[in-house]
Amino acid sequence: MAKEKTKREKRVRSIRHVPLSSAYLGLLTSCERLQLLISGKDPFPTDPIGIPFCKGSWREQFDDTCSGGIVLQALGFTPEALQARFTTPADCFMRLVDFGIGFINLSYHFLDGSAREADEAPYLKSAAEINKPLLAKAERVLLCGEAAKMHWYAGTRPYDHILCHPDRRNAITERDEIRMAWQATWAPGKLVQFYRVPVARILAR
Image (spheres, one colour):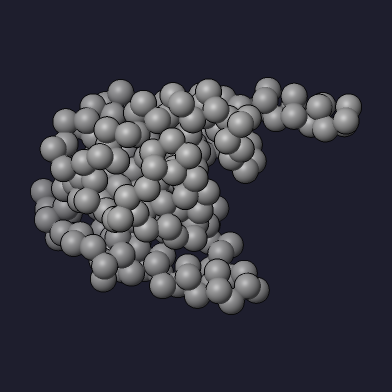
């Protein structure tokens, strides 16, 4: 019992708040309709910048450990085209909102492990206040991995799609069902096959 309590206290100390950047949240809020809303679980454990799936530099964005680069490529973009068009990944993610594509998290506190409804109730409640209005105006919602727990505070919608996480490790796992699910969704260009992503218009100057 004491060991479990110590483990829980250590986890609580590691939880930290990384709110959506005010500029990004402002864009999401002012967008009349969101064509596609993609949700992860929580902020990056290292160097989060307040935009889910977005890193501070292109080098970090397309690092093998960053799922955000995988998502951008699944949307139909190449690293070369994005770096030629946008100075930073944040510029790209801001531009995507102009075309109704947004990103959120189940929690804006880094949870350092699997989300637990009872333990994380205060963090999830604060995220719900941000996410519910965005979910209400989304035409399609992609819930990646543990983001499927969004139903804890936002219910479910017929246009929700629960997907495996874009983490590159899921592409090489020995579990056939996960590996195939990853390939069906997160391989380069796959999301373009299912959703109307105007790649050329987004890249236009």
